[in-house]
Amino acid sequence: MNQFYDDAFARPCPLGADAQQIADQLHNFGDTRQIMSQWSFATAMNHLGLPQRYQASPGHQVVSLAARYELYEQIGFVSPALIFSAPGPSMAAYVIAGLGNEQQQDAFFGQFQQALCWSCFAMTEPTQGSDAGAMQTTATPVDGGYLVSGRKMFIGNGMVAETGVLFARTAPGQLGINAFLFTPQNPAITRHRLALTGLDGTNLALMQFDNLFIPTADLLGRHLKPTQRFAQSALATFDALRPCVGALALGVARRALHEWQTCVAPTPAQSQQLSAMKRRWDAAYREALTVCRQADEQQAPGRSPGMVKTACVNLADEIVSQLIHAFPTDIQPLPTALWQALRDVKAFEYTEGTRQIHRLNQSFSPRQASQECL
Ligand SMILES: Cc1cc2nc3c(=O)[nH]c(=O)nc-3n(C[C@H](O)[C@H](O)[C@H](O)COP(=O)(O)OP(=O)(O)OC[C@H]3O[C@@H](n4cnc5c(N)ncnc54)[C@H](O)[C@@H]3O)c2cc1C
Image 1 (cartoon, rainbow, N blue to C red):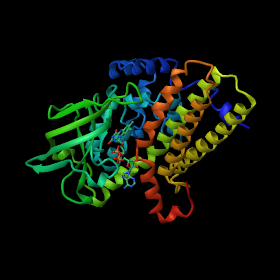
Image 2 (spheres, rainbow, N blue to C red; image 1 turned 45 degrees about the vertical axis):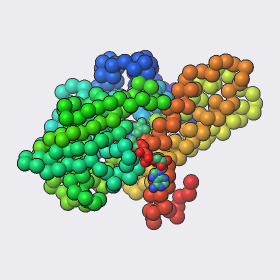
Image 3 (tube, rainbow, N blue to C red; image 1 turned 180 degrees about the horizontal axis):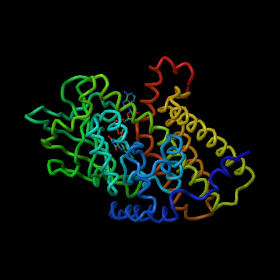
Image 4 (cartoon, rainbow, N blue to C red; image 1 turned 120 degrees about the vertical axis):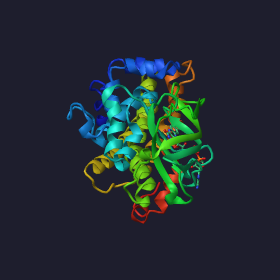
């Protein structure tokens, strides 16, 4: 009944034998760059998402979205902190690949060919999270470039990144938002590490920009119409990575199931409950994988990436919660890994858009609204 669930992960973990040890060091809030540099899989992460022409050895890298999705699930199983702390072009890659001219692409992607390099994607603001169109950070045109002022919140790898993409407003209205290449370690940027309830070891930053100068050459998408810039680049990033966030959540749920079964000899009723969870897990995993394969084949997705993410995250949250409630009271204490899963899984509700926003988008999307209901 749970053939796929039980067999699919019997093969060796692609992340390296040291992945758990690296994650444990991250959980203790060590130096992100130093710890991640020790990871045997760090170079592979550094190259994940590099366009083919920047790959050192094409054919040996994870290039399809489906392969990335499978990898993210494995990372979620070990620890999602690994993905939030990893080197690599990450989310920024989609924006640079979509909007960057040849020089900008060479400058950005070239950094990952040389050495381990950390990037960030600075869009969310303290008071305008879900409503990115109401962004307040400004990029005021000056001689030779722009002066950026404002604040960005929850920026992954914001404390350690040496490069990244920053979104700021050059004019009022939806079409006034632009993307820029930027250097997060510039002294005109003040960065604070945020205290988190879950994802121990992850460095999410609040960034304050005080007249950061960005040269005109670092404005992305100058060769495109304004309608093709912000919305297109943001959507391309999120559409690609939302199922992968769902995969991280499913990985956390699978780990919780694994930890639970390691500690408990289930009663017949609990065995049935576990089987039901695994069947639902299988269905969610396969559905999201199908959407990734459709994207790889440039077919219209059977389900919107936002709703796929929502379904995976809801299920993962439910599974972790049920496991904690079903944990026998006579076995004490509750394993740390289960508490960790409960705290970590909550983060995915907010990563790449909340369920309410995906539902709203869904209801305003005429093509899919009639096909889906959650
Ligand atoms: C682990 C993690 C990593 C992240 N990494 C990054 C990153 O690298 N870069 C980046 O830019 N951002 C990042 N984020 C931020 C993330 O994108 C935001 O948290 C998300 O967009 C939601 O914004 P918010 O937190 O301000 O919540 P809000 O927008 O304030 O939402 C709060 C609640 O109100 C609801 N809500 C909001 N508007 C509506 C509405 N119109 N109708 C109904 N309900 C509504 C939401 O569904 C939610 O439940 C990260 C977040 C996390 C948790």
